[in-house]
Length: 330
Image (cartoon, rainbow, N blue to C red; front, side, top):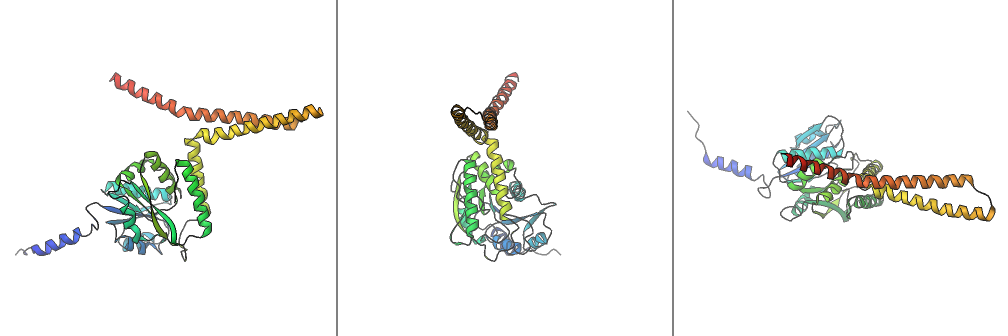
């Protein structure tokens, strides 16, 4: 005999399922890239799950129980076989979000420095606001950042701002919210590794014309010893990436201007050397060789900077012309 269906119980189940969407019909995914964070990851997953539809932990080759702890806390877990760096973890999270129809993505670190209770504030600045990315701005009395970290953060902020052509208030905060447009645009353009993910996101977002807004957030550092980030290696990684990016995108600025400075120094030294020669009748050979090196290197640097600055435009025109020829041929 078939068991009768209780319509009321079915409606209650649907109601419970529907209640999982905490804000609207738009789906939100929290992405937590982490490496060896078994101590804090469980608490972060549970607290984050209150404000999003699902939590995805990207275990970047951890050798502890990070993945198992995250699963027990209720997270979806994707594990990398090897440690590929934070940028790779972010890309994995973005790819999962797009493949599974999420409308918003929140990224939060797994070491406990960010407060998941502030997720609604981050999301508020990208949900129906005209903004594409909301980045956490660590400031105020609730920020426990040591002074030496503040100095390092400010340096990296200026370096990142120099690379993307606009001022950035907190370029290294990993607590961010993205709409689908930003996720879809950034995913194929993120190429970095290590801990330069935050700077790369902002630089590429600026290139894409995405709208970025800052949201004040707290930051915990006291009694926080679980972070796998080495501040010195973090800073060097970001600086290395930004220098490479500036050299690639602005060769005239990065190569040409230093070359021009070398030429000026060589000319000044040359004038001074000629004056000494007129006064003493002695010609300093070593100084003349040094002047020649400065002038040759400076001229070569300016020439290379000009070529690298013009070459991409020439290639682009040739490529566009080839496409047009193919189009007319068809």
